[in-house]
Structure formats: C-alpha cells, structure tokens
Image (cartoon, rainbow, N blue to C red):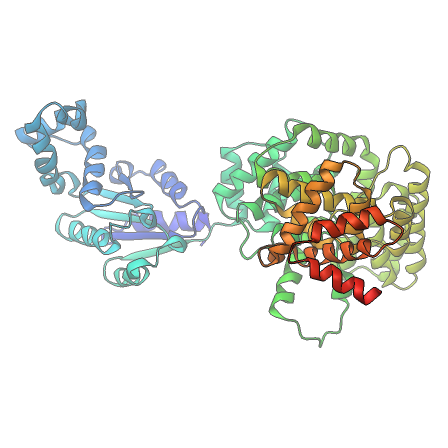
Length: 574
C-alpha cells in the first residue's frame, strides 16, 4: 500500500482493541518511522499519543529493551506506591549517574527496576523499531517472546516496525519471523511508498530550489528510499549551489545528477552501473528496429530496460559534466571550479541548450507518440536545420538516426549533420571543443571531422591520464576503467611516442609492464588493455625508424616474463 493508504489503515487498526500486535513491514528507507510519527502526532487516542518507543539498534538483550522503555515511560507515569516513587525520583536525576556513587542503588538498578517493568508497561502501546538492526546476540525469537508475554499477560499493545528486506538470514531469523507472523502478529500491513510520496518527504527535510526538476527525475528513476533521495538532493544542492538556472539547463544537468547519485547510493533496483550509464547515453536505434522474432538474452532485456530509463530521463550523451560528477561521487572531493566552468558554459550557451532540449523532446515523441503522423514528424524536424550548429554532435547524430527511419526524413537528417559540421569548422578554433570520453555513437561524417582535427589525441591522453591516476592514487575509478577498456593498440603506441615528460614516460611504462605481469588481477577491470599495450610495444620494438625508442622498449622488457612476447613478434616480422 502507498504511504497514504497505509496511514489510513494503521489508524483504523489502532482503533480496534483486539489488534494487540500490529506489524508495519517494508523496504528500508521507505518512511515507516515517518509514518508512525505522523499517526502519533495526529492521534486523538491518549494511548497512541503517549505510546512508548524503542529502537532495537545495537541492543543485545531483552533487559536492555525493558530498561529503554522504562526510561521513556518513567517521567510521565502515575505513582504506584512508595517503592515506585523512589524509583521514579531516581530516574529524574539519572539512575546511571546515581549508581556510580551508591552500590546499593546499583543493585536496585539491576533488579528492582526491571521487576517493575510489568507495572510500567501494563496497558501501554509500545512501538518497537529497527528490529532487523538489533545486535546478533538478541534473537528475534526472544523479542517476539517478550511481545507475546506482555501482550497476553499485561494488556500491552505493540506496533512493530521492520525493514524485512534487511532481515538477517543468520540463525534462521527469516523463518522465525514467518512463524511469529502466524502465531503472534494479529495484523500486518506492508508499506510500499510511491516515488512521489518519498520525494515529498525528502524535499521537506532538505529543501532545494531545483525541486520540480529533481522530483520529475526521481520519479522517473522510481527511487522510493527517502534516505537516498535526501542524499541525491544534497548532491544537487552542492553541485548547483544557489544558481538561478534556466529550465533547459536544469533539464541537461539534473537528470544526470539524479541518475548517477541513485546508482552510487544504490537507490535503483537492479539498475545499471556507472560504466553502462556513461556509455549508454545515446539511444541505439538499431536495437529498437530489430526483428521482433529475435530472441533476447536476459542480459540484453535488462540493458534495454536501462536504455529506456536513460532515454526517459532525457540523457542523450555524457560529457565532461558527467565525468566530474562521477569523480565527485566516487572520491567525495568536490572540484567547484571545474563544475562552475561547465555550468557557466551551459549558461552562456542558453540558446543552444534550449535547442538541444527541443531536440530531446522531439526524439522522445518519435519513439513514443504513436498518434503523430510520420509526415508531421518530418515536417517538425525541418525546424532543426536552422539551429543545427547549436546542437551537440551526439544529438545531431541521434536526430539523423531517427529521421533515417522516417519516409522523407533522411535528407533532413543529413542536412542537420552537415549543418553541425559546418558550424564546428567555423568556430572550433575559439570556442568549441567536443570530447567523447565515453565513446557515444557519432555520425561517420562527424567522426571523420574529429579524426582529421584531433588525430586521436583524446584517446592517447585518456590512456596516459588513466595510468597516471592509478599510479598516483594506488587505485582507480569508473573513468579510468572506461579509458583503459576503450584504448586500442594504436592509442597506446601513440601515447608512448608522444609523452614528452621523461619521468612520466618512465612511470607509465613501468606501471603498464607491472599490470601486464599481473594481468589476472587487472584484466577483469581493464579488459584487454594490457595485451594491447604489449602489442603497441611490439610494434615500436620492430620499428627501424625509431631505433632508440625500440631499444628502450627492449631493455624494459628484458629480464621479465614479457621478454618472450617481444622476441616472438620480432621473429614473426623478420
């Protein structure tokens, strides 16, 4: 049930006295404690208003539970005789503090107080929270045995709050819980908070000026864990600050913040990882146009679902913004200047951002709006010819891919691509610098234009940067994995030849050789990167036009288990 329906049902169950034990179950972070607090705050029944609350977090015995409940109950309880008056007075000054000074009082603390538990808890409504977070020494059978005893013998009523997805399997705890569901619990209601409800609670805890866009993206992702949504909002607030961002700019950055933060904080059920999200920003139209009878593997079906999610969020390619976002999430280090520079560029390109948002909306209609005539879609697409230069290469590619499938649309798609290329040629020397660190799909003509200008410089830099990051940090993150997996033998060769800093070259070569020697450790993360590195070294070692560099490579490999790989290649080419 949704939060609203569950609240109404809980209020109804509490009015019926024969419901001695009521359980509220559900996934972690979906607002069960919040639900109880709301019910208690709005209650008319005095017993509900004065309900005793205890969290089992870290508690290791039933005596600790009783003591916590007594500490909660004593300040407002009615006197039950002289002995109890004395205990009440002691609690007012603190039993623990007093016990440190009076041994006799310590004995009272250990025995007499606990003997008064039935008096204190009689006819009370008791809320027990965080059952699954109890100490492992405290068994669920003990907890539910205590509940059964006090509900039957002393008229106590209980509301149990349980994150059943976090329940430990140790000691058959899940089976014990199932047994007590049958024998002890009178009514159980399961809370299934909607993403809308969860966001409403979270935004009340952590306000944000980007609430509307955050809400839309959070609901699209289906995040229902309130604690995780709070973290997502905080990430957005830290990255975007108090800027007054145009709707088109928010549409560019907020969905990425929500998606990547939700991935990082594990807020997506069976969601993608960073690597998939970084590389799947563009819609693969060939997958949506494949033969309907083609059987998909479970992995392909899952990946299709991820692509649809990314498409629904309006993410059509990742660039340096997502790169810095992932670095921030993985390291916790916020490079404000880098993020501000990117946002400032987006703000300066307001018209371009609006054109890109319009293109994204159009692409969504092409895919989903079955009511629109294809001729009408082609007519609408013609408007992008005039603003082709304001798009980015990824969206220009997407538009072309989509229009190629529509009758009469191919010519418009080609015009859009050519328009973007012409604008790129005229401004690239001063303002435009498009990198493609995540290998997003690009039109062949755009790729050719990039190749003629950059000659693979970005890939080479990525390989060196990734390796140096690994050296300097004794580890790596998603960005380094992506760079290493995508690097070709040609990239490694160009990198080796182009590194001008001799110390950097020394460190780079030694680290890559070390990785190759321990390839079993690194191949699972970097794919065949070390093999492609060796292929590059083979090529250089056999290059008579670069004798000194060839000699250096051979010396580095001599005396290692890799020497034979160079010798074999030289023999084969000789």
